[in-house]
Amino acid sequence: MIEVRKLVKRFGLKAVLRGLDFTVQPGEFVALLGPNGAGKTTFLRILASLSRPSLGEVRVAGYSLPNEAAQVRARLGVVSHMPLLYPDLTAEENLRFYARMYGLENQSARITEVLEMVGLEKRRGDLVRTFSRGMQQRLAIGRAVIHDPEVMLFDEPYTGLDQDASEMLDEVLKSVAARGRTVVMTSHDLARAEDLATRFDILSRGVIAASTTQAELKNTNLLAYYKQALAD
Image (cartoon, rainbow, N blue to C red):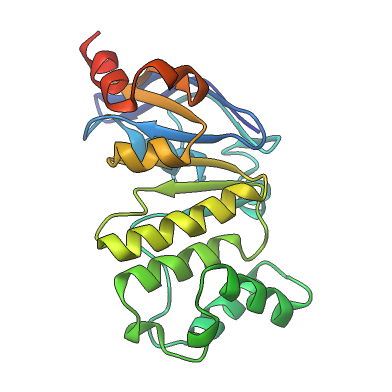
């Protein structure tokens, strides 16, 4: 579903990604972990077709980036700490805008389904600027899944959320993953990542320094594994 080979990304003379290899199978939920400045957001921006690689091969859902970016975007949903919503439109109007952009049929039924999934059906007619940060993030996930994408990218989706909002977002993420979508998520919250993901990749010094699965972690915990990977 995602295939990356020898990916390099440079900003001027500085190489942020240094020959990165990364493969995700259909239905996997991969938590991409690493210290600040490791290149996690840069990498997700390349997967989302928002940034071009300097060198290397990137394929998402069978299409090559950056040459087939339009085909990738049609199969991709992206959520970051910026919700990308229109504050002076209602929740329903925001979703209708994106449904039209993707050329969806049966838009009203799909909008209702998505609002129910993210727990905002009762607030469908309210302006987004009246929403809490957590509610906006839940609607942002609704925006990202409205076209039923095969691949979901989450870049630090918990940033700025309080405990209650984070727990609600947990449930929405589990619902997204339960539908068999392929998910890649960056997060600084290791406990949360350990609960959600099926695989954990550690990005350090521009490459994947270590990778393990939920099953392989049974004799240790993610924090210990993470610290060891960065120390090696």
